[in-house]
Length: 106
Image (cartoon, rainbow, N blue to C red; front, top):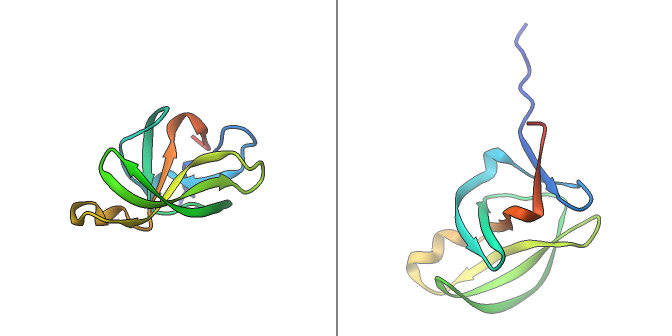
């Protein structure tokens, strides 16, 4: 009988609501206002804020803040649109600030 592997997960640091899986990390090499951030391909149990244009380190992007569905904490943002061709790979992906997420099932 094969051992079942428990996925490594990330949760909201405030209320421990499940937010994403370790396997959904695209890159750990991102910078947010308050420090390091991870780029994720998928999230769960979040609510998106209104879209707005923001000038980030890598140029102008249309983003939506990502809020925890349970406690409302802002955890990062979703890239809705990138205006520079070299940044298009970020579209539809999520930035979560490292200090706002905690490891679960590790």
